[in-house]
Structures are given as C-alpha cells and as structure tokens.
Length: 195
Image 1 (tube, helix red, strand yellow):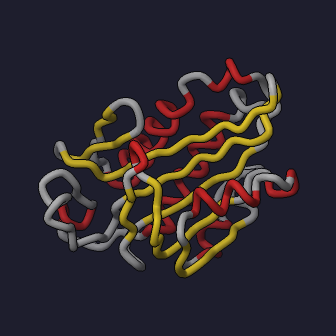
Image 2: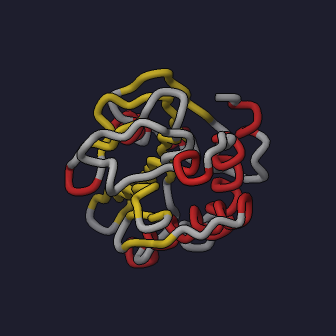
Image 3: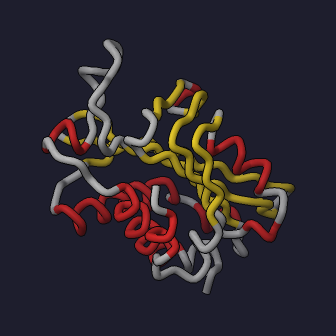
C-alpha cells in the first residue's frame, strides 16, 4: 500500500493522519482505542489483513492480504446525535459515487450497510457512535471493500464478489481510498460539524 498516494487526498481533516499495519485483528477495534484521544480526529487505520474483521450481525469480514481495503476512520463530530441520522446510507452513497467516478461501474446499496455489484456483496460498512448522555465522544466509520480478491470460501462464493472477479483486472486500492476520502469529507462535513 502506497500511503503517500492516500496522503495526497484533497481533504482538510480525514486521512491526514494514517495508522498502517500489515496484519491486525480489526481496524475497527483499534480505532475504538485510538478514538479516546481527540488528537486522532480524522485519523484513518488501514490494514492489509484482518484476522477478526467485524462484519454484519457480528459475523467476520474476510480481508485477503494485499488484495482488498480494510479501513476505519476516527472522527470527533462537533454536532448533535440527531444530525448523524442516515449517516451509514451517506457513506454507502459515497462509495457508490467513488466507484462510479473512477470506473463508471454501478454499485447497488442494500440497506442498511452493504454495497452490491451485479447482485453480490462487495462492500460492508460499520458505523459506531460512542456517546455520554447527548454528547458524542467519537464516531468510527469502518469499511471492508473487495478490490482484487480472487479467492472466496464455499460459504461466500455465491454471495460475494470483487472488482477483479467481475472485470478481470487489477485495481489500485490507493486510488479508491483517496477518492473515497475526498468525496466523504465533502459529503458529511456539514453533518459532522467540520464547517
């Protein structure tokens, strides 16, 4: 993963700090620890491989090494909880717009937190808001996106896919992350109080 390419993202806060690991249990779990420090606002955690990635309904999310995107974003929103309603949908729309802009491929949103390509799951989204009374302590946005994965388990072969599996070529993960971060910050800056 070429982190310098991601650092070139035209954002104000999101992605200016990057924590990168070859292998990790879960980017989301690490993000929860790092989120306790307000200095980590906008920090992204990227891993090549997760051994215990968190998927929908507590299931594991598989991240094949060097093939896919496993990312978590730490934010400290200066806003009310009610303003964050519909956030997961907006994140899904952001990834949808990213893939459309870069490659002109159409992803479909499957409520509440999945993206499909040709009817198969390609991306899962996990959002977590930590609060004390009405105060937001932190917000974590985590994504798993199948980019260049070619190997799928028997359980997932019929229901999951990747860009490479569908289009037969390699895609640049850094390009996807950079574009996603730019569109995301623009889409949610008002909602999370960046402006």
